[in-house]
Length: 120
Image: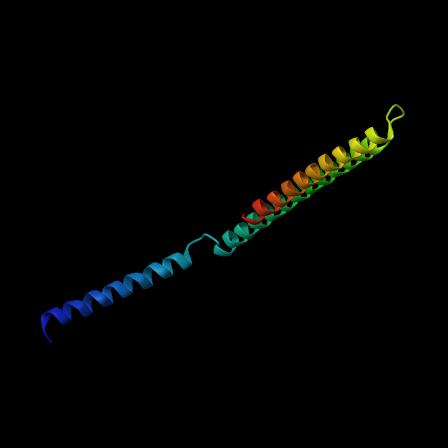
């Protein structure tokens, strides 16, 4: 065998031994690897719970906004005692358009929140 092949074999064996010694030292270290993994999972669960709570709060705010808008819309749709029939119908038409825009905006906000939370 030529000297180059001998050197390659010897250095390969030395490298393999170092890797083996390093692996055994890491495994024998006093740090508990399972505990670290458990902490990682706990942190992930905690983040998931926090995101779920935040999502519930956003949903509650959305529902509250929608409820307030619907109550306001009902009040505005009633006829006022000083209005003529024609004025009332014109105001109803404008109010329906405004209400539709508001409901769409509130719905778009909820969709945006859902998309943003899905990205995490």
